[in-house]
Image (cartoon, rainbow over all chains, first blue to last red; front, top):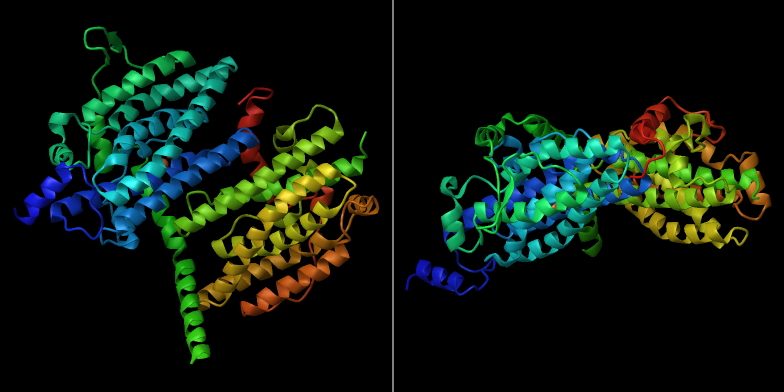
Length: 312
Length: 252
Ligand SMILES: [Fe+2]
Ligand SMILES: [Fe+2]
């Protein structure tokens, strides 16, 4: 057996690959792409919710939202660290985000224009993220799998908190309920797009499945998400904006309407409502922080020099 | 019924916390590095948590059915009695950490004293919890003040400018008004002159280590505790209160 065959057999036995293990270049590249994309999504994902932190309508909601956005920053950190075990630096990964070379989840290119969006993002977006991410807790690359265990625990909190925001709105005044419905109308389809293109159009699925980086296909996860979410929407008393949505007894699943794939590809290509703003906001934070990072480095060098002269 | 001064004393502790917490939350998603994004959000969360406890206590003393959100969302600018320093715009990261250092050191010493008094046991319990948080705030801010002061020429210059801007707002921290005097006489609040001596020591030592030195005490701004504010508080409150006021009386 050559290295490649040994690797494939090792993976097939469900064993974990660790940073020092030999791995094919393509496996390493796929992981770097996927983990960094995931890390960037966490960080860019802070922006739409950050948009409501200062306007949260109660101190309790403000605290919960702040803590949630903080968790997302933490997820970004674990994932950048997991990615660094593959031999890339966080600085380079961030530069790729800013240059547009690296992608992040397209969902964050939609604007959060109402308070209800804080509920919908938690419920649908974190909900879809969980669907995508729970299988990753068993992914073949050890550091990624371990990071995902921590991430998933927090994501399910986020989903529950999002649901609770919507529940409060749905139990509230007519205006509050309308706010919740309007929000679902905007986010439902983009949330379904989070599972990526249809299986037959997905470039990476087959190889990623074989390497056990991915464990379910895009369409399988999308269906699972819909089946889970529809009863929750009924519980809230909200209408899902899909006239073709109905239970299919034979399949044991919900049938649903066609996703607007043209919109999907447009947003990926950078034409979503907020693509440019999101990157500009990240770039600005990075640029405005440059003097802080330089100063921290200069200071630690001074201190190191001082302590070595003291030691000498 | 509790004395008006007692209620006001507690509510203004909450005002300091909520206004500073709101300012810090503006960093959420925009920090210079991810680690500091998390740290600043943490500080914000601590202050919002302190404000909630303090407002709830003030509402209970007042006994008019006002909960924490009444104080934060349904009072106008002139009813807020926070120190002016906390309402100033967040500025750059250097301004934020310098304000944190100057203010959190004061807040820490104040809460430490409040944790030790027995006139208001509920306040003592809130203060005891807050002291632990504020101790970290002081450490975090002090580290950054030293790092940026003794970092690059640019960072030193920026930090120096922030210090000069903030210094005129430090006088108000230690100038007692009628409410402070009432609270001190009641055995609740610390003597601000004594607090200042300790604050001076901590601040001078850190500013020296940061190679910045201590500014001259010149004219000091005041008015926050009397509800006379800078132009900035109105915008902060307009933003914070906008949604809550659009839907008064609802549950979120
Ligand atoms: Fe996350
Ligand atoms: Fe999340």
